[in-house]
Image 1 (cartoon, rainbow, N blue to C red):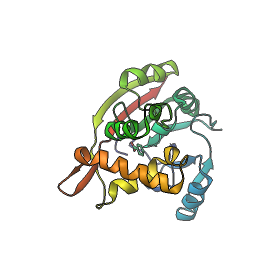
Image 2 (image 1 turned 90 degrees about the vertical axis):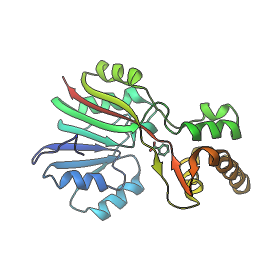
Image 3 (image 1 turned 120 degrees about the vertical axis):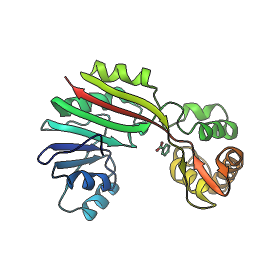
Length: 224
Ligand code: BEZ
């Protein structure tokens, strides 16, 4: 939010706004903000929470925004968008020349322990089934540049994140690894989750706290 530095009167697009919390925070600066998300359920919740804000349905990989905006913001979303070219193309098209793109999402090495556990429990096909895209700086910056963005800053950093409670990892896995679990019967899925938790315990559970090994890629760009 600090890097975005939204100004009163600016037009800003929040890509992957979910239920709209950060969209509302941006709006508090006096900017005119629109939240975009591909989940109708999330948008219904966002509209209920923030009836005065604008929310539109759209896919980050292929949206077209009618009016050029001053800035595009995206937090914790772009690692779910495997078509990075499509996403950056859409974002670049939405920006006016001189407009800013500020984003943070999972970067290379994100949740490496979870990925290793998935591989150990489900076999090597876990990598092919991965719903995530975790680029390095070296991989992502050329895509940005190819779509007319000047990369002012791009860096990858560890952001270990504690989870709540003894069941924190189980809850996290049930929420975020649905694309793996839904191929199984409920009983088999329970078994897979408990095997994953067992695999992860030595690495991610310390002194009664589960900590997930997030790594973030943060980028700041200006559209030519
Ligand atoms: C994250 O890096 O924020 C994340 C990664 C995988 C699943 C859920 C969240």
